[in-house]
Amino acid sequence: MAGRGSILIIVENLPVPLDRRVWQEACALRDAGYSVAVICPRMRGFVAPEEVLEGIHIYRHWISDEAGGLVGFLGEYASALWGELCLAWKVWWRHRPRVIHLCNPPDLLFLVALPFRLLFGTRILYDVHDAWPEMFEAKFGRRGLLYWAVRIAERLTYASADAVLATNQSVRGIALARGGKRSEEVFVVRTAPKIAVQEALPDPSLRKGRKYLVGYVGVMGDADGVRYLVEAAGHLVHSMGRTDIQFLLMGTGPEHANLVALRDRLGLQGTVDLPGRVSNEFLFSALQTIDIGASCDPINPYNHHCTMNKVLEYMVFGKPQVLFDLEEGRYSAGDAAVYVSENSPIKLAEAIASLLDDTSARERMGRLALERFRTELNWDRSVESLLRAYGRLFGAHY
Image (cartoon, rainbow, N blue to C red; front, side):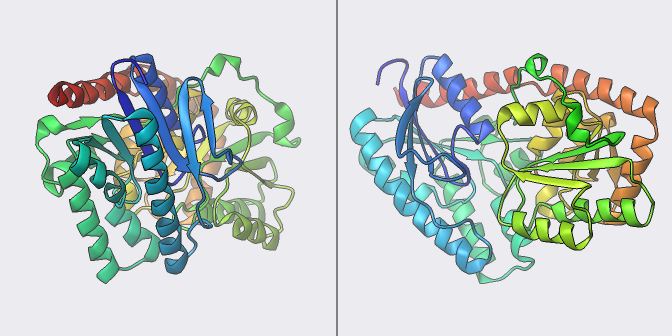
């Protein structure tokens, strides 16, 4: 591989190009003159073992079913680590990467990178998508021996890393305090969608004849809170008598089938659409059509540290939104959202109804969302920080 240097990116929880953050990082590095290879899982329709897309070499490994409990959780990670290690050697012999870029979760990928660090001096960049110990506690609802094992894995990953990318200031604080990194080693690279909004056309048919359309886009796992939104829709219809609102919940994950069953038990088949994974064309058209977006990630220590992709995706389309009151959610959306102070489907329903009924507030929040995204949260700012991190790594290496 030619250019300024070669890079291997490893991501475990989503394939590329579906993982928009990783794909945007890979493309930005390619555009800056680096040669880029990515290792990721075969899943969600992206199953080619090898391919080259837009000049980026992609290698995909088999992975067990997505984690639905502790046994599944461990099985998923074990199968992924084995696949990643095998492919990392293949990438090494073909491309000789000088930096291995690790995207968590989990904080176990240092095990894949460490042999290359010890044998060849390969540098390691730790891209912290999620605070994994907080994520583990939120997923399983408890601490214990495995929680502390996760904390140790996190600490070892920080210790192995020559530089760290943090998605926001909260995560940067963890890297400095819990990870023991120096300030100059940590770079904030926010997740910001890069979408040609002007090419997306609204589709009124998505409203199913109703006045309002509420949208959700994202993963549907047991920690993502989509159940709150389905139950909120039930409260709006059955308790508040709102038959003028249609819901479109886009995305998939381990809880998708359970959410469909919940919708059906609540008699909401005609009110809540759950189409699963959708194409970008469908997604962008839907985001152009919705009146408000919903972000129902529950309030907990893990989510307080997360910058949710969906929050920014609603903003780039100039849409107001309703979300549970999370620290990083509030930082991202600012005055362009209504915040619900407790994890309650009833409170969520009331906030949705109130915002839909206030046209002037929705218009004002939509303008604020778009302005804040363009001036403070756009991807170009993150690219500058990403390239500074790589300039440090390659400058120090040579």
